[in-house]
Length: 217
Image (tube, rainbow, N blue to C red):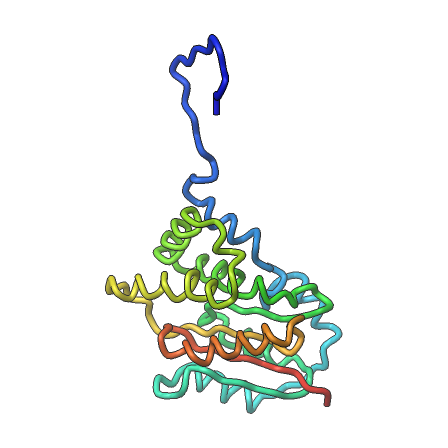
């Protein structure tokens, strides 16, 4: 810091490294997330006006029942016409939501590189022990937020959650993660990779995953 300095006197100075401060890891994570992708964001609310509205009462009831059963597979995939179905499901189980992400070109939330950072950012708001682990990890390695999808998933979600489970932390009933409009992900390769990561890892995590892909009606 003071290389090549001459005749310099340091009396009772205190140096603070702000980047290493508690909470800076979570701030970096949030800065690399997409808050607009959450189902209840203000941007998302305005976008709903252009999405075809249907009731889907039967499916929504089945969806809620799936979230309650403990013996069903932890992943549900739905392909159908573009509609407000995912929004209806999210609103119905909002008390049990862990995270949501809506891929949307019009909202600018089609960047796959910010998918897992956004999920982790939302998860951290609901689970303080997880948030503390995550904050420390990112402070130690700030590059985690820009790693590959697989590394982000492992380091930001799997490893911290695994650490909590290993310590015997009770995470309660499985929470729901809803991923909407994955067909609007900007990268076809990333879209396939995200689905593969979810399908291969779902049983190891305390979550239920619901993915919604749109097709032309």
